[in-house]
Image: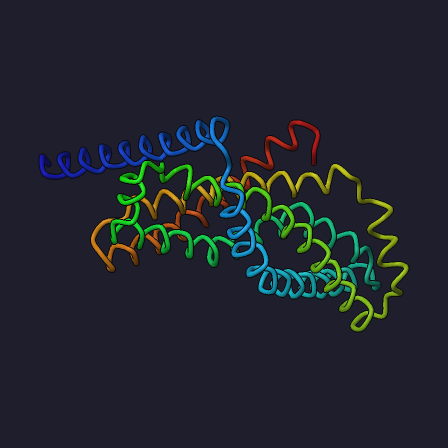
Amino acid sequence: MNDFLDVLGRRILAASAVMGNFTLLIRASFYWLFRSRLEMRQTIIQMAKIGADSLPVTVMTSFFTGMVLALQTGISSQRLFNEPLFVGTVVSFSMVMELSPVLTALVVAGRAGAAIAAELGTMRVTEQVDALLTLGTDPVRYLVIPRFLAFMLVLPILTVMSDFSGTAGGLVVSVMRFGIPENTYWHDIIDYMETKHFYHGVIKSAVFAFAISFICSYRGLSTTGGAEGVGRSTTGAVVASMVAVLLLDYFASSVLVAMGIP
């Protein structure tokens, strides 16, 4: 029993230390964000790595997701009403409010988030981060803030592109599989979609960008143990980011609905 309590106590202390250091990283980031010159060159480089390099897989994922949504919606409505009804409405609402922000965040976390954790982890174990401190450059200002800004700027844009890609995928299946006229598909979207539904997904993507950028940066900068440690940090960053996205999805949706942004 005593051994169990000792292990539990050590785990609680370790978790508390991680949360404390993570909070200090966020605090330091916002301190430098408003008190120093931004590293625009590094920010643009990270925007290209996170955004442009992630665009193909993001668009492809959402396109086929839209196709599956249209297929399942059309089949279900045919069984219930003998006609494929409101396929465009279901596909567009599902993509814009839920699937586009979540799937885009998961894809970018698995791709760009892992790259950030591995890059910063390698810099930590090879003492490049210590070299920045020796030269009088704060690692948070030079390494974390550009990645944070890049995520905040790029992930909502990728989400919007996923919205259009998923809707286009649903259009292909609706026209080719169920014979729904293209005008009918678009009217199902235009008649019911409002601007606040669009904002719902974009705001959630910004929340996900905040979480992913700091989780991956923290795991990278806290790496120890050489090459093996870099692997552990990269895996941990991806897993933690994906779990955070799924948890925040519910709470962000609840808050937005309470604010009248359904």
